[in-house]
Image 1 (cartoon, rainbow, N blue to C red):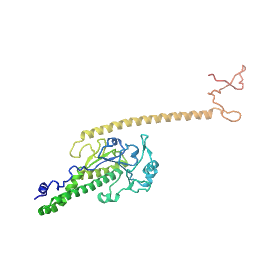
Image 2 (image 1 turned 120 degrees about the vertical axis):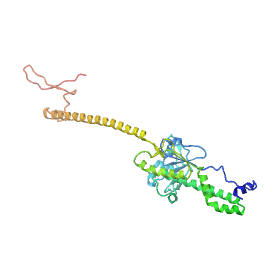
Image 3 (image 1 turned 90 degrees about the horizontal axis):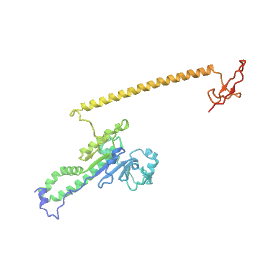
Length: 340
């Protein structure tokens, strides 16, 4: 008799069933970019994990904080350090916010960070390797490890149920034979009930972020391989491409991009030419100024008061005018008041 028929024939009061309504773990990891507003803030059944000092810029409805940087870098941000110590700080909205009892995960917790816990780096490295180039990939790995731990609990409960149902010798033998595969099936069943969402994470810009992106996508691939339901916002560049290599024709899109690059290059060249013309004009003005200053210094008499201090320019309000007498002799120059 099979385990299924045994379960059917057993009295209802004695039967145990696998909890069909068991909900999987639902985790939303949130970063800094615009799509963070799409996260399920305050939605029942969801855990929201944020990183670094995002607590200052997002709704105060998150459940965990991760700061996976060297301790000396963390304490440089005095406001952030004070927040980790439990001191009230100002949210971007102007309201006060406190850490409360929410856990903080760091590589090296300080005693004054009262809710800080040591991030399980070694456990994650043993299970998933060393390819971690950013905080988000570490957080995804931690989420998967916790989901898998709950899947093990779910599988153990299911095995206990089936073992009790397999009371007949033949059923017990069948149970022993199928136990490894049944364990995997139950684990997969639970993982398929789990959801992992990633918001506010693009890693699309050049330099540091573009180098960090592959690690994040690698961890998301592992999550999908474990059966976890993934959600990445449309605005994020994670797990996005214009067309599948070899299977889809991207020639029209590629041609449009090439034409756009050509157009922008032409506009940039025109602007460069304008800049060059302005530089030439500026050099001409500078040359004229230097020539004029030369004439002033060589051909104009120095103008100074009796004590050696500079005299006002002849074009200023203190102009000097020489007067000529009737016999043609030049008298001492006299000041002429400028009219207003």
